[in-house]
Image (cartoon, rainbow, N blue to C red; front, side):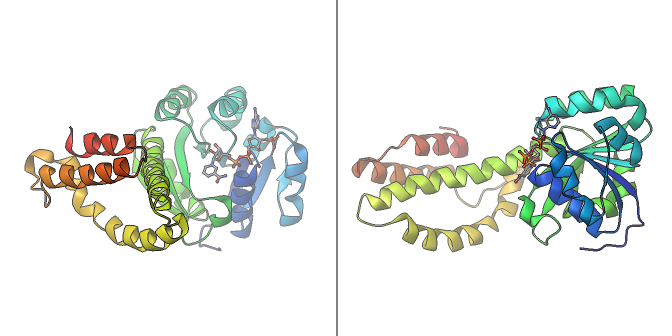
Length: 272
Ligand SMILES: NC(=O)c1ccc[n+]([C@@H]2O[C@H](COP(=O)([O-])OP(=O)(O)OC[C@H]3O[C@@H](n4cnc5c(N)ncnc54)[C@H](OP(=O)(O)O)[C@@H]3O)[C@@H](O)[C@H]2O)c1
């Protein structure tokens, strides 16, 4: 994907499967990209795409006006960023490593003390999707830095800024993933239930996927009930929802399947 961003000097620290995809998107977008990876071979593999390879992480960070980190975890970020305070002072640093909201805020305190404009990011894509139409990345933190480099960041996928609180991107990230895991857990449970009557999870998936796509559109109408419960008139009563969940629970119990999940859903949705 080529966008209209003027060519920038960008550093990419960490070239695992995701960091490599990010670096390739930047190179394809026409930017000057300096890379570093703990295992050097992964950096050398990008030379033919036009990347410059730095001898160490501090040297890589010195080369970029925008510094992107995508390593394993918060500990690896700190291991390389903190000793490079002089190399990143006055720059925009985007941390695309998955961290918790409090880890992001804590790194923000370090960044503020070292005059770094920090942006935290949560990538909502797998590496193959980077730069494609379905990929999006959540960002929070330094708005000025985000706006300055927005066109560059959009090379990764749609750039969604979710707040100045550095913990915001991580909190939206885990909340989206939580919805996904809840869906998979319920599908696994349903698959066991239909198998107990001679059906299959494969058939259930054919029937469930289009249904879930249509009900996902109802989330927008459901959200005001969470944001402003006092002003919200829900279309379905708690009594109705509780009865519907109890029926699922009863059907699971009748067929000898576990029911814990439905008790949890009932408490989460109607509070009892
Ligand atoms: N893959 C995905 O689908 C996906 C999606 C969303 C977010 N993410 C996030 O992106 C980040 C990177 O994930 P990935 O999929 O690229 O993982 P990966 O392929 O396992 O790569 C991990 C990277 O971290 C580096 N690393 C680990 N410990 C390090 C240390 N102490 N110092 C320096 N570098 C270190 C590794 O270097 P070596 O090459 O030397 O081992 C490698 O470059 C993670 O935070 C992940 O949660 C990934």
